[in-house]
Length: 433
Image (cartoon, rainbow, N blue to C red):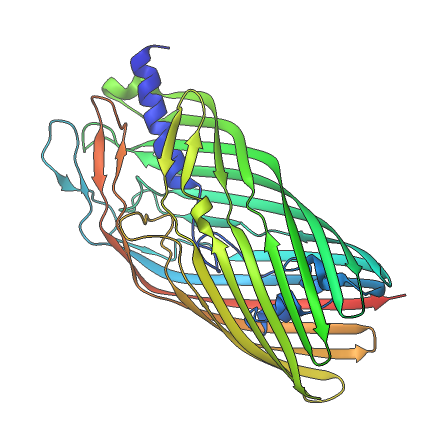
């Protein structure tokens, strides 16, 4: 392989990886928080201070003091809607005047609907408890049409994570509980985007990255259970992921044709850490108030490091964010509990660095839910959430074949408009001896 070929493949591979590793989910950026139907009903406003396996993802101390077994199963249907609109994106081909990128100017609903399952099981021996949560915290799929204005920065993308969280908890006293957990996380990704040929009348080329890998993190937490109040603190570490795979480049014509190929590569990036503070206070026999604040370390996702033969670092410039939520649970009858909540979540993306694969913005979540207990040891949870996203610019410039004589800048100028999502969750909780 010639040096020039390597440079072109490296530049093209970097463009594909940069465009492809993230996309919006339904908490900030690419994080999915819908791991509990009970929690969804109050906008995730008290999960770190609640008890049982349904709160294990947020705080490993949640299972402390458990007697016997506890199982929770949940499924959420996530239905996002949005328009990603071109506001005058320009492509600059070598030796040619800047020109409109062309293509369909509005991408309707590029973020796919998704079904998100999760579950947890725990067993307590009094002071000592063990548990396992199975979640998918960073998963998504987006599809932009081949003729979309965003095709050079976003195409078809699919990312799936499976997180296995074995946990142990210990009740130091009836009031004080601590817990610790490991997080084994598998990531698989398929990421694609178009590449421009040198002449505007030629069809686009295509590039697709595939990769996967297992990596580890950890979680720790504690609760103070003082009469009608429960206070929870927890921390979930960042995980450094390394994806091993390949980049397939095809459809390049003319002088670029020699660069159609399949090359092995890898990419490393970090998921954010989370520090969570929660409180639940039973202010009357029927009514419990919930509050939760989280500091999310999205600054860990500051760059994507690309391995050989690309050997480059692509800046992402994410920022740390806050998430704040409040809600309540109200027991209207021995069998029935109603709940509701509101959450505000900041986006970690910054103006000037937001692309069509991450049309993310600040959002408000409004939730209602209910639980019914047809038997003493069995509950069914249901919830509905409406998520309203603020308008945001899509304005991250990029370049195909960067650093080569055929470098082709794409000056991105777009808008995220009319973005919202509906999330429906259903779950069940079972206790057993």
